[in-house]
Length: 429
Image 1 (tube, rainbow, N blue to C red):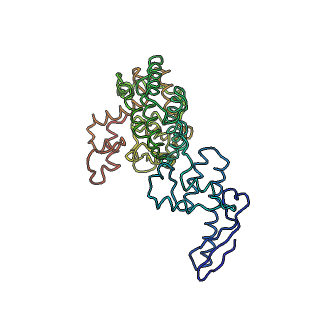
Image 2 (image 1 turned 45 degrees about the horizontal axis):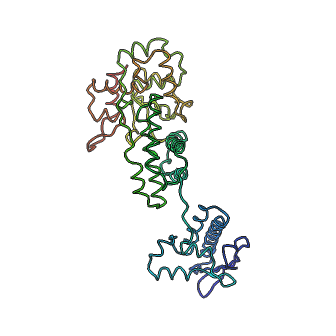
Image 3 (image 1 turned 30 degrees about the vertical axis):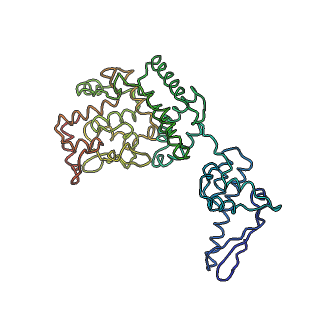
């Protein structure tokens, strides 16, 4: 790369590679580096050359690619020449001086004719490709990439799967249509499919409503990111399809009674058929009220048994917690203390995957450890909350131990580990 001084300012000049001659009419490019420092000039020249190569590569892909590639290339060419890409119908309404400025920026070929590719980029001669439903999901992943930050691989999978399932379900019923071509009749058809499926498979309304919510979020996000201008259209076709859940919230599970926990779940040999890690997760919940996923995700350094007050520390290390309040410490008492003493290194079999709840629920059902058909493993968490209420824990301590937000201004440091330990010993099983 030739770097040279012109007056007191460095410039660089370089031959355009032959493979880019179809999209770059200049044989050489010469650029001012706007500096009198040779060291800085070398660095800036490398950066500018890399940007040029990237721009030419993008333009070349547009030259040989499909509609989406050509559109992206046109935007890139316009950007590299100091303009934003504006579609021709919109540009036609722009001030005359803007149109003239763009036209004058179109270089000529060697035969004197205007460069078609650059002209299309600067004057909006490339049509924006229609975005289909499956493409909208790809755009959604790009827009929401920050939501995956801090999540474990399993948490990313759990976050993505419902959205992918919703789009797959929609496409299976109405096809991979362009977003702008989706009609209200299409969405009624999709709703009817869900209605029949709910009846045949005895599913709750929440299952269908989640699909509808995800679909709306994905299509609206893609529309906003790409500036498609379909807000009114999407409102018209997407609204009013949700189902009313006559059965109520299936997550409103009853708590286990203290008697059932003591006499059935903790009965001698009742849990012997459950592997030790799953057994310790179950027992760890009894006197902590922690979520199964929170216990399963604990690292060895988060299980502190040698301190004055044995406790666990639930932290967003290698995973994302449900909410900021979920980060907390919980003293260990009773059978939960014994469980963590048996599993001091945590639960590597379940740490990176969300299978603990399914494994434990299956074992409890098969071994008649559920108090009713409505009970699940999570009912241990509800039972812990009921015991705190019966033990007259104040609201702040209950919320702090449970990982819930305090519904008022927070003052002071809150209850100490020692105080929580003393209170928990009074309700421990």
